[in-house]
Length: 257
Ligand SMILES: [Zn+2]
Image 1 (cartoon, protein in one colour):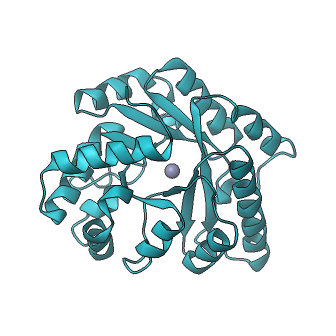
Image 2 (cartoon, rainbow, N blue to C red; image 1 turned 180 degrees about the vertical axis):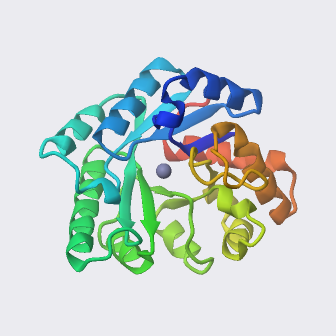
C-alpha cells in the first residue's frame, strides 16, 4: 500500500524520518508521497525524496500559508518541478475555515488558479485541499481543469459529488476520518467511489484513525484506514491494497518496481 499524503517534512518526523519510514514499511507501506504546504516544507519534501528511494515529493503552497509567502516562492517551487522524484503539485486549494474575509478568499482563489496553471505547464497532477469551500473549489476546478489529473486529498465532500470530481480526472483519497465511529459521509464515500479512483492516505501527523484518534498520526497507521474501507465495501483488504497501489502508480505515471 502507498501513503498518498503524509508530512514526513513536518517537525514531528523530520529529525528522524528513517524511523517512521521503517515502522510503516514493517506494516506493509511500500511508498510515501510527502506533501509540501509552503516553501520550506516543499524543500524538505524534495530533500526526503532525494534521500529515500520510496519517498516521492509534491511541492506547492497551501491556501492558509499564502499570506506568509515571499515574492520568489512560486519561482522556487517551480524550479523543483523538473526533478523526477517531484511527482505532484500541492497541496493547493481553498480553506475558508481559517480565512473568512472576502479579501482573503479572493486571494486564495487567484492563487489556486495560478498554481493549477503551473502544475499544468509542468505536466504534474495536483493535490487539492478544500475545507468549507466546496462550491468554489469545484467551480475553479471545472473552469481550470487539472490537465494531468490529481487527488481530492482527505476527501470530505458529499457522496453525490464524487462522480463530478472523477469526471474531472481526479482521484478520491480517504484518510483517518473514514474510521471515525460517527463519520457517516466518509463511510458512504468509501462504499461508492469507483475502485479505480480510490486512494488512501494518513495525512500524518494529523487525523489519526480510530482507535488512535487524538494522538499523533504516522504513516504506520495506514493499514487501519485501508482495512476500514475494505470492511465497508465487504471485500478483503488485499483488494483495496492492490487497487489503491495501482491507482497511485497510474496517476503519477510510475513504472512498476
Ligand atoms: Zn496535508
